[in-house]
Length: 258
Image 1: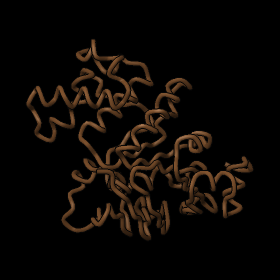
Image 2: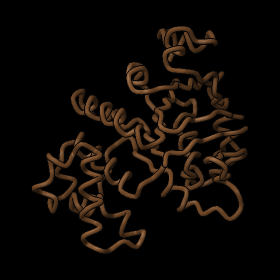
Image 3: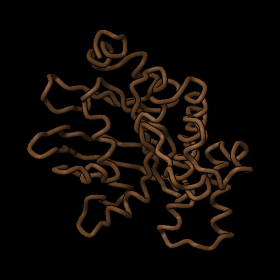
Image 4: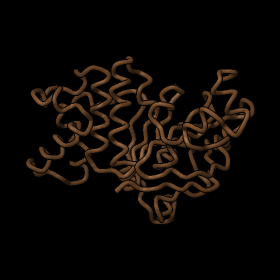
């Protein structure tokens, strides 16, 4: 079941450097929330705090709360690996496991979780590839290397790998930035289908993409180089792009900076 995320007073650090400051917002279940803003404003850092990937970076730490429904993901006794299983992630560049087949790429997370029965793996692999709109393109070559697919197919393979373990939230960090326009359109269509099952958060530099795929949009900015990124405003996407509340949002969307 897709879950809601409530973030309260969250700041993230790299050593002594505060990368983002005092962010509070809600991500609604079964919706797409887009993060937009200029480079260096902390969008990807914030995204990585939502599934505790930020703390994997040397010196990375977080203050504040991230609640998944009623569970504090940074609470004592919470297993970060379990968090990352519940909140999956798709990265900027397609990263299939290069030595693994298409089948084994999708099944990798299941096997890590202890699932080894072939019939069950077969069912989940097929369902996940269908969910990523990739099954018809690869069903006759499941034993071929995933690295042999096109860039757009590799990214959909990574999405299939992420959804195979049945997360409740899917984070996407600029998932189309390395793709051609046709592959980008395929991923955008897929995002629209996946939000019926998952809570989705996407970081994008492409404002047209944010307008096309998201239900809500959050604009991040920083006042000067070296200052922490901050959330300027978050609202329904239509409102952000037609009548934002803050002048800086309008300036960014209209291309006056960024």
